[in-house]
Length: 301
Figure (cartoon, rainbow, N blue to C red):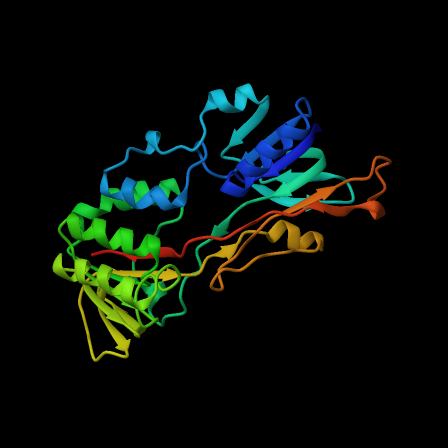
């Protein structure tokens, strides 16, 4: 079984910050970083620019291979952790491989939570959380004629902007009284809303989608809205608060801490083993938290 002193699961901002902090205190300890992504680390907030083509995927990485080599870090991408076994001081990967650790940090970020909208499961949609999601949506944009964005958060509004620039007729549905409510007050958001409206984006605030109906090809043929008497043909895009990706930690029964911002939270936990390896002496030594943007989902026609 492969052994490492520090094992970091995830390549989020929290993971990179922890990696930097570890190296400030321990210049030589073995560090291994595991991520399910097939690429170097990146910020989800740049994904709409990948969708629009303004940024190439290879130019948005937060760290390069030279950085990890310089810090003597083993970076493994395309690797998923299936289970955490604190009593063994090891994790099991999806392919059955095990990696032992002295200290473990789970900094996996968040996964999109699909809104509970009747009919959503029957229509085609895209999520926008990973680089592969962004590349897939970029390829679909030229074919999209209508797009409905459910949720006016930061990434959702960026995506609406890029879809509109790609020629789609875009409608944004936001449950709050104004868009970007987690970042701006009503006056500031009002300025942004006017700019979007001037560029052809329709904004429906204080509204929610009550249901979707699919056509024969799986794309939505219409949507019923609560708050606005509106039925619209075309694509559907939904934004929901993401869910922290900690299934392994939950199965392990460890304590979890999180800081929420507007109800959205990411969670990270660092477990440290006692020098004598006594499982009973395990306690979280350090906790880092990360808050995440809303994650949109896209259904296109």
